[in-house]
Length: 384
Ligand code: ADP
Ligand code: MG
Image (cartoon, rainbow, N blue to C red):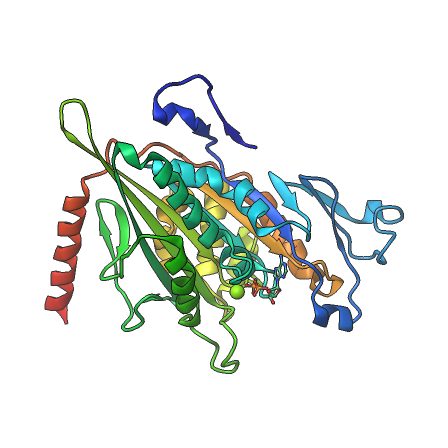
């Protein structure tokens, strides 16, 4: 809804219009889980309409709007999804415009955040039967590429990585931790697998496998860690010859991010951020929180360097990127505190301004990038 078409343009780049220079923020409520029902959960969240969420601590199941209106709080977002929303609805509303933009050589990123168990991985990865945003985005990308394949050559490369405990790992090729380096395109993880994807079918299995490779808590062996951030990067390279037979190269990158559980870690003001610093909590999430605070306050210095996650996401926050956040929440009153934090944080994220722009002109040719990466690999080999 926030993407404005400018209508009537004949140039491809005009067709999609201009995405606003702010982060779009969505909320998705998941259904009440079996365990929550068994524990006697009451519902404390209501999706009032397509944009509004109402949260109240004191309501019983049926009367929250009638009796307790004054004791709760309303939040407004770019869209709010009820527990009946389908994966396709969530994808179409939040991410499909970004996929279109990536084909135009722009960068985009989608974050899912919320407490552990709030539905982040379901939203991002989903299941075989109900694939999530990652898979639907790639499916859509291939279908859009097929529609326009007559006018050039597209290549799609995937990489899937994890930040756990300030260590970056390749989820497609688990092994030694990766080192972050800065090149002309920004921060890159040296040696990260770039998987050339040809169709959607292979991708779901690949991502499921990658997800299996996410670090698990030592104490809960079968459970994916609530402290691991997973980032899928989809790079689309487009090559075409213009009238004068010059090769035009356009590279767009879409980052899809399943953040670590936000419980206790997302502070909305600097005082809380500082008080949390000593505690044993997720440094990357804390750094993300600090960066967002600094961006909201319009600070000159944004502390991206404080964590691996914020370094990797530098161009997804304040940089030249269209950014979407999906806040995942549980309906249960047992998660009230976490839900409240998540909604406050999401509310604050609405204030962030970005500088979304077309990178197609200043992006270097892919050939150079490869040389650059080869150099990094060589450097690394020398070091070790
Ligand atoms: P998180 O990644 O935030 O820790 P999950 O995505 O693993 O949480 O979700 C927790 C549980 O709730 C999972 O069993 C998941 O399948 C289920 N779930 C989450 N969101 C939905 C949804 N929208 N519809 C149905 N089940 C969901
Ligand atoms: Mg998860």
